[in-house]
Image (tube, rainbow, N blue to C red):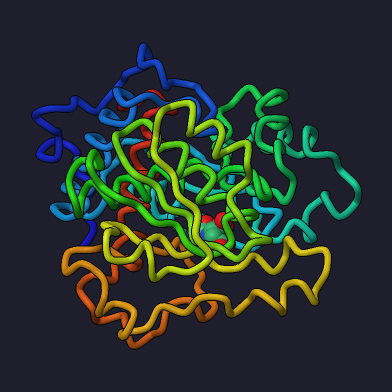
Length: 329
Ligand code: NCD
């Protein structure tokens, strides 16, 4: 049953409704560098409220009549469908452009033109694109808010927000936690955004990767300047026992110029039930998904495996972001 009555779903703490004076109204979300701890506290409060509302009533009409254009130049399961679910649970609707080859992009239309066309029909756009900086470029031309759904090996800010929300919902505030990121830290946009976001807290960061897939030095430098302790490893053994959050990523095949180099590192790490024996009993195991063998399916029933819960948290965070940039939270 779908309930769309907003009367009894009003939050006592966060009055949803017209909030066009909100600092996020009309803003694009391009990089996690836009956020401070105060912003994050606010976003997660709204996301938490969204979770409670979904659990109570399923859908409600906060964004009735609003339209989201989902413009995806790269494949996506979770980002595209969670934004769609988020919009529809808030009573809005979606123009899905999942396969740009069936759009005028295949006729050679430029990104600024495609974005300026879609904003004629919509109130907000999510953009996923293979080039670093594509969302920033789109936001320069667009009048409507652009939400960066991943720009090549650059950033994936909405994913990092949902990752951090997952950590907070499962572990409480991140201060004092040791977070270990493992896999393709060079090309993985989710870890680029998440490590930056975590550097706003008092955390320790470990990076485990093959030598050719290390965290980019400019990101390490940036985080170093915030005074965050960071350690790099090629094996997980040394870092595992002190880890509170293990964040596993896939080796990003599509970002390799040389297929042979990919073949050499693709199976570098596999987390199995044996690995988890040396992990803390309350460690959480996260992954932005898709996984392509880095986490054994035998682990899915381990209560520490948080990756499916992480997906669900993503919808609440995206509901919060949509409401904020559309001036309703
Ligand atoms: C990630 C992405 O697209 O960067 N997926 C996602 O959005 N959940 C991770 C990946 O593709 O490996």
